Image (cartoon, rainbow, N blue to C red):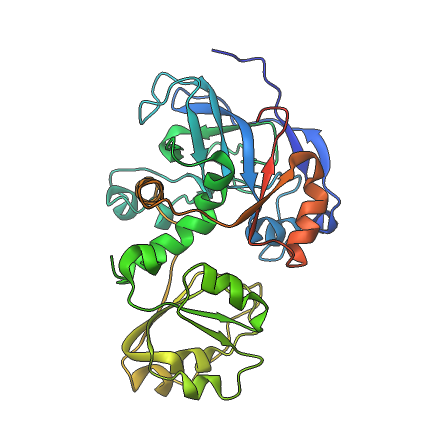
Length: 342
């Protein structure tokens, strides 16, 4: 097993790093255990969480920080107690979570809900393991991760496509499948798909992706009235608190469900209780997904030939890529390609 690889990547040292000021540098990975494996990173998706974290948007970030939690690459070192039969050379991936308590008396971990562990939910970056070691993400050459949270990538899915599925993809897949979406989007069997955006700029793309109807909230007059009581399940991926929350609730049918997936840096808008009581609505949240859900999603997307819309960017241009991501230029996700390993 190779042990001569060096852990280095793009490091944010302060909130200004989100403006394209990350610096390439070395760092110390977690202390090796036989449950771990090392990944030679070939691809890493850029997620909105990366930007929030680099600028300390949600909370003070534990700098220096290497972001990136949509990691795909090859296993180059495998411990003797790793899970899922992963071998050196296998193509693998890891998403936003790289640890939980995994204790048998933890209700969430024991029930296969590691992403809701209330004892030790450890992120793939900007977190710490129980021994104090820091977690570092995928804008890098290598990653060391406990194998429980590492998945094999099916041959039918390219690495650049698999990367954004590991956070962006599973966040949506889990929210849909856990909240009653049919057998899902078009692939999951939903009868009708409605895309909602502030403007009509993305309408043509949404329709190409399978949307049956499009609502532009800043352009369509009285959109909440014209589309009232037409949606059973509304998944909100918006990460800004400036959303017309009560108008969204008007779109839901009786017994409908609103699920928040995006995480604004400011509190969500207040709403009148009658907005949910009158129609018996449910307002819920959804957090990424478990390792088993990610496996299911990867198998599903491979079987259904579902492909994300992505653009690849060189890892060496990560600073420019995060600035473009913040400016909304991605259509619709960026995947960094580590050309030294790809």
